[in-house]
Length: 428
Image 1: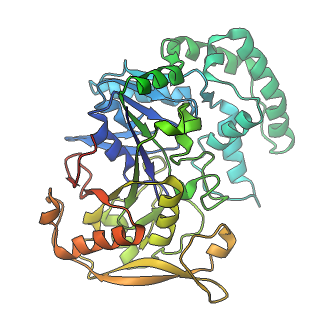
Image 2: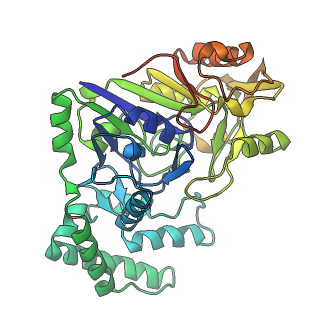
Image 3: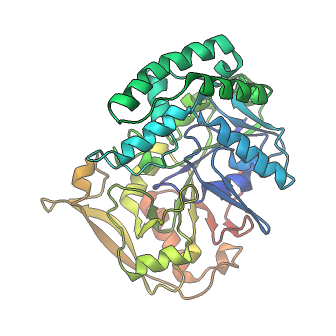
């Protein structure tokens, strides 16, 4: 048995897609276990750039099967669009399947997300407006529509009617918006069910058989720990658990089956959307990082907020996830910065010094990061393929991270291409 879990350790956009793509070449299964098409995983294959939102990032190289597991909320229209885009570029998609238990993002979920964000006086969380949160709400409220329901006309009709009774009342009476039409939605999703019927399977059954048979299985998370519904900067978080623990509920596998827990972090920090960001840079250097690192959201196109590496939050993320293999991406973006800062502690509003991450998002806004400074390097490191090729100060930076976290960095990414990696040990 060989299982691998790839999760983000910051606020998303760490480069998980690239790492999953690289590891998928030796995987029998690649499995997305949470989130939805609010993810934006960019994968480069030669001159081709693929931006994947819902499909597993291993779809391009995995020689086996790619699963969208039960913990994912699926917009089937987005799924079909991505499948078409991949096929147009000559790639196979016959190995992609969706769990029968995965919940379906319906048109009213998208509208609820939009109306709430637009509501005057409402909490502006900064969602992608993809309907993710409202779909998870219905799942927890036990009124959700699952992929298996798309194959049962009577069940689908009953569930849509019940949901529209509630949602249309909310649209008309609270948001002052028009109601949705039952026939239009029902007919559209019955047809979608017909298109997807051969792809809707019991993924958890096959996965557990594969674990028993010793197959290589790669679990891929979306978003990251600092956006976790429980352990992130609530309420500025996603609606699921993008943690290693989320794999068990999100894919239907036992915790005893998880072995190689791979955490991905940038060499600095970025964040899309609202919420506290202690090490954020609002100056020319922050803009330089954004430009050099091409820091714009793959899903929304929004400019990412940029800042220094925050080891306090990274320590929190590695602890919750139990990470035993660390990946540092975009180290090349830091080239040319004379002095690098790394946050190792916070000073609280009452002048206490702490080295742990707070559960109080409101207090976090007032925390002042305490930095340690490290000398930078001038060299272009994008062509480095071994650790020894890195400048000494770049090595010092990596080793400072390792010492603080107590975890070895097994891979350093120095560019967006799947070959621009320094691999310090083989996991497969």
